[in-house]
Length: 211
Ligand code: PRP
Image (cartoon, rainbow, N blue to C red; front, top):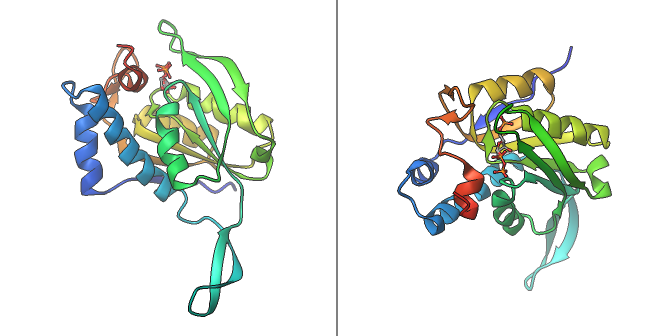
């Protein structure tokens, strides 16, 4: 019997405030980016709560004490392009993390993901992989990205999304039950165009200013 990894939804007043900024169509690009960075840090904080530590003795200016180092490689893998919007804040939080890139876009007519680029560090095989994308809509992109990472030897994968549709969550839980999911919101549904409702529009376009 395979265990189902958890789905964690952020619960914090600051996150509720920032989600509102992100959802509001009147929000400009600089405010959008700032809110995205704040939430990305909290998503990373939550996703990395149980990181393994290795202790080592250190000396403070006052006396000896026990210190700790993180005892695993962390690899952040944004799904290009929109996933890049989460990376800077995550690297501020864990500056030792490696970064892999996975290029994938969703065909606007078929809604199917199309792979176009990948460059991954070798550490993905033994380390903790944080796959990041602000939107989990149908789940097609994340599903394909996780399958791709597994084929490349990744064993420990966590998926961070800002906003998730129930349909996408269901798909990942079904196809990749061992992957834990960390999100700031589970929205109501997908519309006929496979957009998350109420959502925030296209995160990549709003973050990069390509509306
Ligand atoms: C968006 C989003 C995800 C994908 C989600 O990317 O960033 O990658 O769609 O949809 P899915 O769950 O139905 O696969 P988009 O294709 O807009 O490309 P972008 O990253 O260049 O904005």
